[in-house]
Image (cartoon, rainbow, N blue to C red):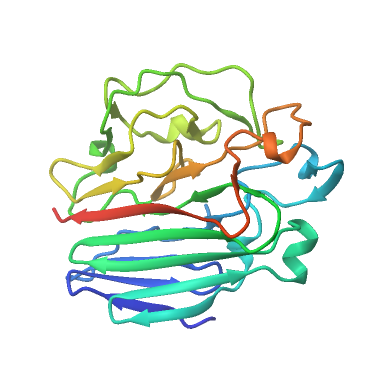
Length: 293
């Protein structure tokens, strides 16, 4: 197994796998784990990075200037080895650079940097995509961390809540599980005011998806246990997911979304895709602050 890269602030310790630049562990000073147990009976992922797409493509491929390109669900970054380009006791930055292998699926020169930094009880994660080519570069990006549910501190699963910074009355979207494509009809939101009560039954039809999100932060946890304050200022969409019954809850800020059913337009017009001019870069941040219970 690849050696994990560890960083610490004293209050928190994070361990990152260079394969996918994936956060594998986040523990407090008492050694309590705030990430998934990665039980193989449910899902062995921990916090994959979604690039250059989020979700599934119609027919498993996208169309670009009249040509079709095959690309697996969520893209290739999660299965790519990143280079460690900078590190200190409390920070580490990993880089994925375009290669012949990535060019087959995604014909753009790029770098994707993933920076982790611990500051007290907060983990800062910043992804930066840079266009190294001479034409505009379309892409999407998503975070996909799976947090422990229940969190440390002794509170029961049923006592946990997701509390949004703003009221979220708008409908949500769901996907068609066999294809992974976005269903056309919005569904009533399970959020009451600012509060979502997560329950395994909510995820029997896969993820809850907000494609028009008012909030850019939320809190996950229980009043009598630990809580996570999660801040995502740069991403306008959100997925919340688990395999029903698992001991994790994925809270996923996204810039991008799965193809709608029947989508056959150019990739540049795919919902949530953004474009970078030659030489330009775009950063997307996610901060997690641990409130111990």
